[in-house]
Image (tube, rainbow, N blue to C red; front, side, top):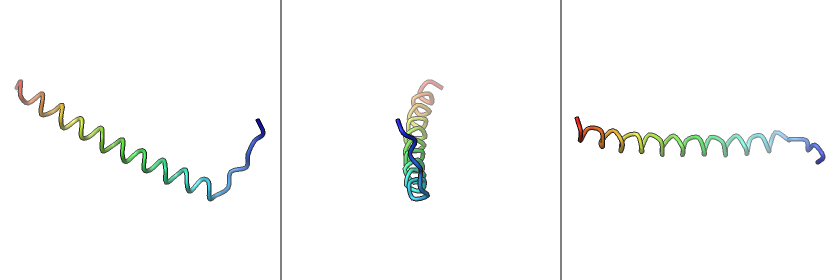
Length: 44
């Protein structure tokens, strides 16, 4: 495998992708946390 030079454009694109992934994962995890919290409240 030859090492590929990464341009600033590539870094910007991957940065945007990473932000999108992180934000969507955060939304999913907070959503599931709220669901599980509601489930826990049933037993309190």
